[in-house]
Length: 193
View: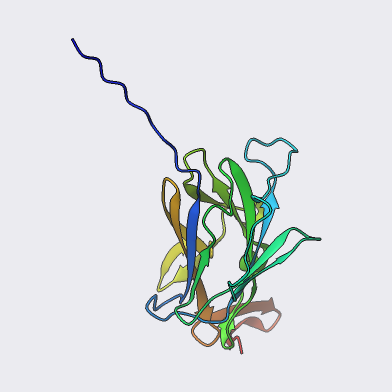
C-alpha cells in the first residue's frame, strides 16, 4: 500500500493593492490621493506593537515614501487611482492603521477616512478591515438607503487582497440642518463647498 503525504506551503508574502474611486461612479479613478500606513496594536489585544518587515527597499518606486522616525509609509495613487503595496511589506498576524491624509480637489475627506481603518493581516495572509470603535455603527443615507459609512472595503483571499476606497464629490451630497425654536421648525439644506 502507498501512503500520500501532503505538504502545505504558505506563501510568506502578503500582497495588497488599493484603488481610489468616486463614491457614486466606481469607474472614476482618483489620482493623487495620499494614504499613510503605520503599525497598529496586535490583533490579540496584547500591547505588543505590530511592525513592517524591515528593512524594505522602496528605491525606484516613485509613489511610496518611508519615514523611519515615525515608522510610516506614505502612498499616493497613480493615474489609475491605484497603489500597489510592495509584496511582503506587511507581516502575517499583524495589524496596521490606514489613513487617508489628502484627497483630490472637489472631493470630501471624511473624519473616519482621516482617522483611519485597521487592516488586520491573518495567519493566511488575508486582510480584513476593522473600523475604529467610535465609527462601528456609523451609517450614511444614500438614495434613501442606509449603508455603512466605512470608507474602505476589501476583497481578500489568502495572501492577496484588493482594497477599494471611496470618496464623495463635495457637490454630490447635501447636509440638512434642522433648527427648532419659538418660530416653529426651520429646516434648510446646505451644500458642502
